[in-house]
Amino acid sequence: MRAVNIHEVGPAAGHRVEEISDLTPKPGQVVVATHAIGINYPDMLVVEGKYQLIPPRPFTPGKEAAGVIVAIGAGVNGLSDGQRVLLQTEYGAFAEQVAVDARMVCPIPDSVGFEEAAALGLTYQTAHFALIERAVLQSGETVLVTGASGGVGLAAVELAKAFGAKVIAGVTSAQKGQLAIEHGAEAWVDLTAENLRDSLREQIAAITGGGVDVVIDNVGGEVFTAALRAIAWRGRLVVVGFASTRIPELKANYLLLKNIAVTGLQWSDYREREPAWVARVQQEIFRLFVEGRLRPYISARYRLEDFAQALERFNRRDVQGKMLLIP
Ligand SMILES: NC(=O)c1ccc[n+]([C@@H]2O[C@H](COP(=O)([O-])OP(=O)(O)OC[C@H]3O[C@@H](n4cnc5c(N)ncnc54)[C@H](OP(=O)(O)O)[C@@H]3O)[C@@H](O)[C@H]2O)c1
Picture 1 (cartoon, helix red, strand yellow):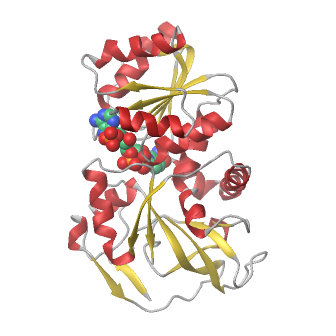
Picture 2: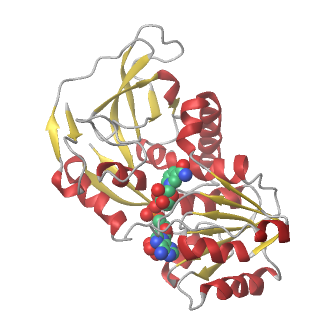
């Protein structure tokens, strides 16, 4: 079978797809033949050696794929040969086959295609855990999503809207604001405005009359600092990522002055520690999709051998919604 094989981490263009042995499942595992593979921002970080966990070399990157079970290891119950599933894994998905712990696969409903399933995984899971588990979002609250045109951002816009929130998209252009509005945002704010520290608070106040209840921050840097100042009394901010590549510092007096909570999310911890919880959330995400309340935006599809072209787009800030590899 063919797989992206990383011998040493470094720029994406330096790596190749290679022919490697077919996989056999260990006890407790299944092997899935992939039909659509999700591409995520952390994949770029892993391949380039900038992620917190770099697997032993050689390894295959890739954190999720939709496909069909082709082999079942000893001790696996409740899954069958030929079953359509979405899998999540720390690495290994940029391949024609993936061997994965059986607890890391979730059956795909009949009415959901492979591409849609692969686009409803990691980014929607991250957005769901950020909104519900970390921010404890309540229906009727106002949510600011920063980086709202990106993978996690657009998923957070859709899910927050589906949960009854009023959503404000933080974006860097009118075109990206319009994309967020098409996916459920009520308004957008400009993250490139001069003096963002004051401007973001003013833009938010013009829309809400006050501040936002929840911030989902995918960007970090000065956007984080400005968003903190745009939060309402008893608001919550969830640190999801640093797409700006800048890790901000926090002035703790803000938390006290407005009774604000700042919290973080590392979704992969939930995947490893709480697979049954993650599976329940995935079923809910699929249900919301089947009900027509989520509409993942698949902006690009690449052949497996063109994975580097896709990953390089994250560095160029050239990604909207979700990109897929089609093996
Ligand atoms: N915590 C977790 O468990 C978890 C899970 C998945 C991802 N993440 C992290 O979440 C972040 C977003 O991931 P993603 O998949 O959504 O990436 P993405 O698709 O590349 O989206 C990134 C977004 O951030 C915006 N952005 C980047 N730099 C910016 C800046 N300086 N100012 C304003 N906006 C900026 C981009 O807007 P433009 O296109 O306009 O630049 C884009 O909308 C990444 O840091 C990723 O590592 C965390």
